[in-house]
Amino acid sequence: MEPAMEASRFTPRNKTLPLPLRRKGGLQLDGLSRLLGQPLHSELELANSVADGLPTTLITNLGKAGLSRSELSFVIPERTLSHRIRKGEQLSRDESERGVRLANLLLLAEQVLGQPDIATAWLRQPLQRFDGASPLDTARTEQGARLVEALLLQIDEGYGLGGLLVGGRWHSAGQPVVYLADHAASAMLEMLVHSELPSLPPGFQLLK
Image 1 (cartoon, rainbow, N blue to C red):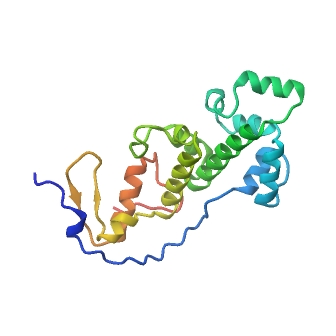
Image 2 (cartoon, helix red, strand yellow; image 1 turned 135 degrees about the horizontal axis):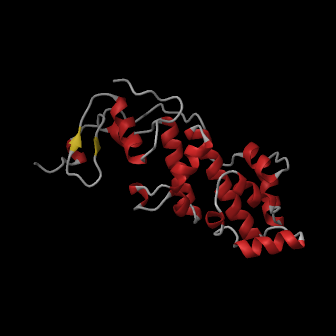
């Protein structure tokens, strides 16, 4: 089989793509308010609260939302959490930052994928896009969390940008094959296939 053609051999169709995101990235303040058990009116208010230390309610409610103790341990070890709760102490600044990062991704995944159980299952799933790591593991760092957020926003919009620029090009990971089509749908399929979703997100329909 002939090796995959290089991208330079394709002529870009349209470099200006009107693809507004239906959901903006950033903080999900309404959902964070629910997880914290207190209202948040702005990102500045949240930033100040994080600096002061958030309540341990955040971790408790993340557990109720479906995350296991081991998945929450990178935010705060279980013994430390028990100590904080027993003493009536707040989370530290670093713990608060990690907790908000994790909570925000969980909320965004629930919005994009439509159901909490599907969202948590996807967050736990190893993905080729992250070199075999799960979105949860990838999100242990700030930069990794941004990558997971970017992927969720791409899923939400069907944002196959690379494929659109070269006429719907996409390739199978690890296979020297390039598929071509003249429709944006193929570019969207590229994104959906490599996101390894258990089912189509809400708002998407697969027509045979």
